[in-house]
Image (cartoon, rainbow, N blue to C red):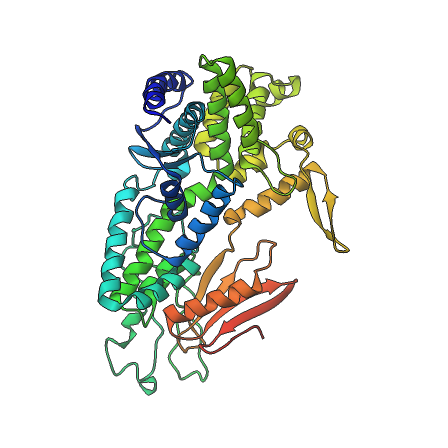
Length: 480
């Protein structure tokens, strides 16, 4: 934008703010900044203005920037969940595009502030990630870039295996440590500190079931951990027998950052639908010229354009919110009698949904037969080497989407035994949700886990309906 357009943008932003608040939006203060494409795509690749360096971020940057240079895709804005929130606008945007983006951003920030999944989000994560970047840079200087990169590679391979439903730093009350008991013959009982590597005081409490070793004269070996543990990253950071203090610190930093991003994974469709719903209504309330109205219509149509191969979250989220509002504004006689709906409650209902739901419950509770037919949603698969539509039944389409959204579409892995076979090996279990693991990715991830644990790592799963265990023993990966 030119300086004159920038000044006009600031004046019209005040009008957008007034309209947004009159529609009921409640958001943190937002700081807007116009940045060139190189900066925008750097922030998009790293996820934050300042973050630690890693080759995967550079790879993402070059892919995104190349797509922008060849006009294959475009990031109009980047908004950061913080208080105050930060919004970065692309320098090449027109005045009208930045007005649309501003309206879109205000709705995003309203969602960040009010959705239940974001309530425990650290609102100072911009500063926290900058501190993390400095700490990791200091470790690179002290221990070498290659050593730090190996830990980061392993940490990022398992970064989504966290437990987002617990306090990021809360510990359980102190209790008797649940460590494997060893006999003097093992050499462990000679050293009163030898078993302190199994730091599981933070693990969920419970009596557990004692397992009798053979022969009966041997001491019993308690389950470690007492119950399956969801937070793999934290378990590795605190219980690994080989990690140095700085390596544990790197893992916990990655975990803290992932917990910040997790609510965004859970609410992608809702968040984009909410922002699209309100940018549409805010722009309609603005006094636009004919040329601006045409430019807005073209931009909006591009945002909600359906794809034959994947779900457009902007379109699906928008249509769901509009459907909910319409149904609660104009209930059928059956809905009036069964649910006590009076009519005219649509706006209040969508604000309630915005506050309490995630994508999974949003789809499960509000995707209707009429909406599936309107959006022409279907399931497709490869049949005899060709892609074909295989299902259009609305309930099966809905259930498929719900299944895909379970645990954000990420494999659900738990730590089942940190002293597997009594040899300090690690046994993980995949809680199968109907989708097999990517075998190549799973085996590669086990290599990274071995780097963090130091002993063979086992992963029990289901593959094509049969029980299977992947193993990495430090030299080769296998699935017996």
